[in-house]
Image (cartoon, rainbow, N blue to C red; front, side):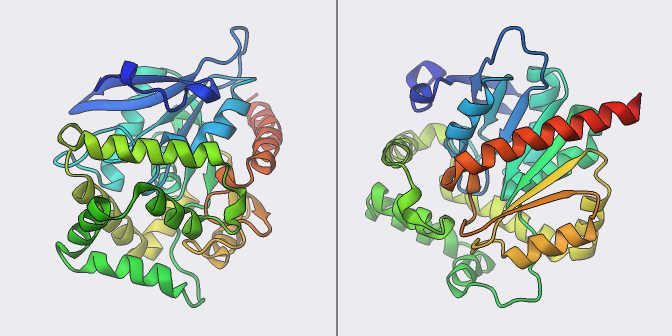
Length: 318
């Protein structure tokens, strides 16, 4: 399928695109923004199991003042995965290539969950490509709290080769797409009633599309598990990961829902304590994807912080 076959983001004013980068096609969506805007463009990077759909509300709002891109990293959304490498570091390289060859100017880089981890690695390795970094409930090492048992059970299967792939493939072939979508919402939202019906319908429609074009998308389950295992390996190297985060040169805004079951709020508070030069904002009663659950809160927080952070950065440079 081509970009012309996709219409999921059109109700939010975005256009679909597919570009060949390196080893294959990459799907992304785009809001052009005002023609006379001199604001830095934004690039939005989703998390594990996510896609460009995770950014539709906030992307549309931010595009009132700037150009906005949302990319599907390898193995997710509408970008083919396995046998292409879908690991965190491979997708870091994809994001670097996307900025360098497609956007061609420094960006405000915003990532959620695994996308936050990817964005942190990009900001650390290529500060010349990133004006500011926003980490939304990013993947972080566990703090000294008891993890959610349901989350622990979900990730435990990745320790057994082949088990997760078989379980996920069986679920995709037997469980209705809407039921799977609602299960994911229950995991990622603190209040499931905040999920918009049109967003749920769009999520279900894209899940069905991915399943129907698996030959084009690659091995969906294998792509997911390669990404998940790479994420867990990085989190297991706590000291090294924390040193990487501390060495990011760009301004950093860390956003966190205090009812996140995947990344406990204690982990975000620990990261904020280790990096007092970051700005930390917590959303009460919100889960793992604040940009989906409370977009009206996330939008102004990011806009206001960017205005101050980039002004301070310009003053320091001058």
